[in-house]
Length: 618
Image 1 (cartoon, one colour):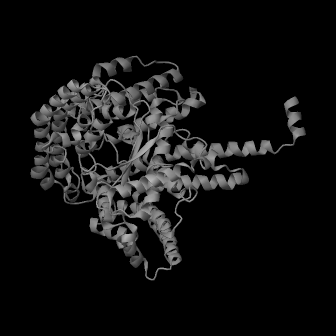
Image 2 (cartoon, rainbow, N blue to C red):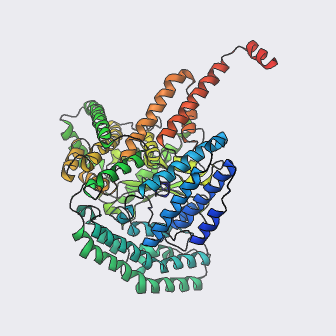
Image 3 (spheres, rainbow, N blue to C red):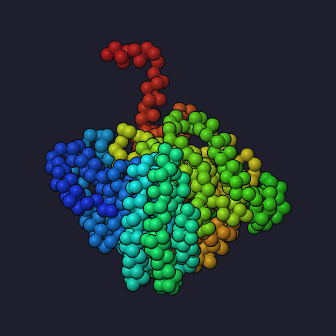
């Protein structure tokens, strides 16, 4: 699912396609048959409308996040029949896009067509690989997505709570369908690596504690608004608790037992994604899809080695600047273990993040002409997933749904959460990283809603990583340890290029990847282990960060060199973000056109007043 999978970033750590009921077959047929047969512009607009509606109604989890009405009571149809239906519908939309005469489109719709066609084509190419058999791992699956989707639902009226209850009633069916896909994956030897599944049973069981009031599934019923009467609150809670004990607890416990009894023991031991059936071609597809480039895994590996060498040199300079007596390993051990670099209280850590976020916000107008209206908050990662979750992630908000964006920070195991990484992390996940870029895309009313929800990992995460380099302009990285932290984060993404391709293409072991990461980074072992396991279950995804950053930096250097004193960083950033997320090849073309236009404007502005008057008179 290229567009839907990318639409929620991220980074994500984010919500994947395990959540919602397929667009009703008759509704799709009716809408598809009504597509205009003539008029390129009308054909494109109608197909975009259908595609947007199809995503929202086929994946109501995404619709919940976007504030799309009418489907909050559903889950994705994860049955074989539902998956086949969605694939067939996607193929038909691709065929329809090929009947549109691109040359007859006005200029402002040509990018729309290019992105729609490219998304559909990539998605259909992906159907040759059984991605639906890999829905569940320690990073993703209903045990992660379902609580997040439920928490994002409106919770203002009795009707809102009735909708939540309807969705909860349908949850056991979804769990059963997902479990059936996992069983089929076992039979076909298509599973995540066994070593990465160790926390999965605990994640599932954390959803169904003995006290329903403590369950992440029923959080809405523990925090009911005062606008709902006490009597209605009691009625809704009683219904939720009865449903919890009768249906939800057995469904989740059954899944946990299946994972422990069958799935983990039967999962593949080999950690390379390419060890699965047709794994080499499958991995190559993932690399192309995530990076939006034609680079091979071997080429990316070499780029990673070069970046690691460059960044390592800059890190050595920082070490010398601190006056530290010792080598690189000694210094990173010092950063990992000295108490001065760590909080001892979770709330203090969160206050630290919020303070950094507030300081950043006041500096943003110097770098951006346009800032989003949607606010964001800073919250701890939920306890039921914190142990195996990465350091942080961003969850998009929605003006339509009345929900702010959220930068989630991990407060688990405080001795693995150093202060020197906090500034770079906040810049990446909040402002001017993910929140600024995604919220701006959501607020662009002059582009089709399909474009506003679109996201390409290389662009979204490339922007997030590029944003880290803006920390210097925002008044961050004042002390050498925070500056080393920024370089550590840049190194982290460079190391990804090496270890992801190393493990999945070049025969590296998990232990070899962990050792390489530790030898070139100051990140704690816990973080490194979590990261390596992430690359094992999301192969190719982590390659997009550094490649996207390098492309954005290349474009900025080109603009600075060609525009000279006329280069305006605010205008550059506004143009870069102005079309929403796009593939890297499209981004390069857009920015080249902008640079050429700026050059033309600069030349025109240098004409004398007399010459200007003569031109106007003629």
